[in-house]
Length: 611
Image 1 (tube, rainbow, N blue to C red):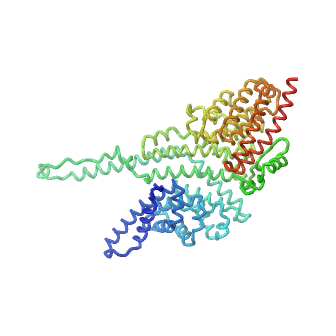
Image 2: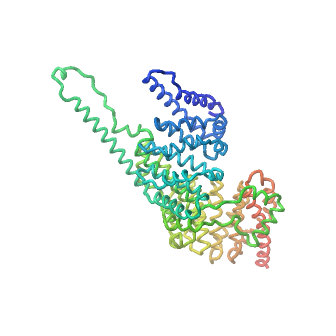
Image 3: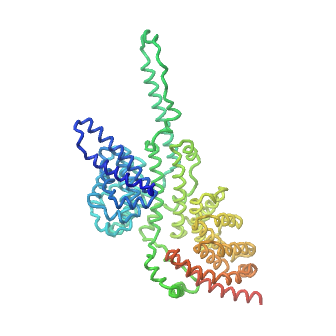
């Protein structure tokens, strides 16, 4: 649509509607009101089209910036006192176009921010107003505050007071729950400008909100809201039927003798819920809670993430192949090591995560959505999209598990029994779905969580729960995935488990199976990222242990790696900077260095065992 130049007439229509809202050409008051409503209805539809196009096309967003559409959309947003539907459409549009759009953020003027502030300060008189304020607070404010130090410096005490008031507001609906969650995310973005004496209190308030959101049983709320909708519709139908019957009482005989055409009844009980717009109160409440839980989990992931080195810093380290190799030699030492600095948390954040039982609540959200809630939503077309949202909450929780188990000490995660129970739970989740390989989002999320969990358990010598058969089933399915992330995860899981088995007796055949699998991935996968991970896994599995040494000789690991070494080196040099990011290149150079060392080590092993 964008290539066929739909944006030109669409922008022209938006401008015409904007001008029409200011027009005073229709003198009679009633006609003027009718004209205004007509223009606003057209504008509402046009903004919805704009929002959907911008969500699907970066080119459309670029045209949005170039044509100055921000001013028009903000004007529509400012109509919230008289037309909240138009304002909500404008807020949704702003949510889309402000995401990862620094060019647009630079053009936000004081008057534009004033419009947003006015919308945030508006009294809540309906669910629609609540939704509007949620959108403004979250999708605009949270976006513009993220990684924007210039804006943070300009925040006044009154602006911070608005955010604090929103965070501390009593929850009267699920939309308010969503609002508080999103404002909490915005305040997290602002934490660096908050006075140090208030840091602990603010961080505690943020994590308390997230904890309360995750405590809610979304499945039960969905069922409750659907039952409330059904009851409301039933009551409305019964009331209408009573009114119809009442209107038929008191007819005279003459009236009764007259033939009246049969009245066609509206089949409300059967169809009205299917025809309701997605803005009905009960559906909006359920959607707001699911969105709040998804957002809360995303904020927790952000809380757990440390800043990575910038691309420029990596470029300096990787200015040449030789310099890169020398850098890896000096910084990683003989045994290899962590590429990035380990994650770390402030004492205040760490305390808030554990005091509000965030790990336990995140673990609970990894369960499949309530089958009863899924069944209720699946039977109704209007509610069916909530099934996808419930699945998204589960996937976000699995990603959050990855962050938490990589960051917190075992005792703060509930101890070894809690991790073993979680590993068993994740294995059950995975293998309870015969077609799990078809669900890429789910597979990537759960493989990431398993990878981090098994890594932590291996480091703490906690016994693992996956059998070799389960392990190979997961890896054979995952390696066929089109997602590089999934393939990297299953290869890493194989390396972690193999390195544990290498220290045990009686694992020779399993180690040989793992070694052959990893060799095949390393030599055949089209992605160098996956190839590098497979080589790393081989280094881990066959680095130590008598069983591992015997297995490596029997599968002829040394000759296979010697043959592949120049191929890998050439691929890194050829595909290098043009195809992979600086941090990926750094990892690949690390693998290249370790491959040379590992080949030398395997030569000594083979000489000793064959002597």
